Length: 106
Image (cartoon, rainbow, N blue to C red; front, side):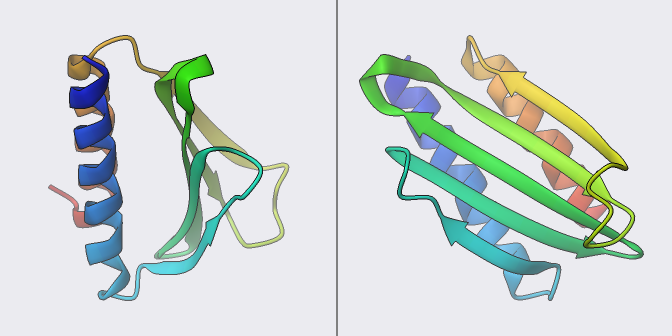
């Protein structure tokens, strides 16, 4: 199960990396405080989206996805936060599909 989740997590990273070439992703940062944590900011229309994908190793085997949508770069107080703590591959796949729909509109 953990291996499947890990594969899906890397699939999501690949998806977001591909979106970088379209100009949607404007910021990417690897957080050294956690085992594996990636931050993405996607510029879509008048909104900025920050995606945090983290895997805290053996102590926390469930990947987490946080999506923050801002009206502009500084409007931290106006956000929509989707927090998904995934217990299985199905819920992780649905999170990937939701992000894919947001990026590509499909």
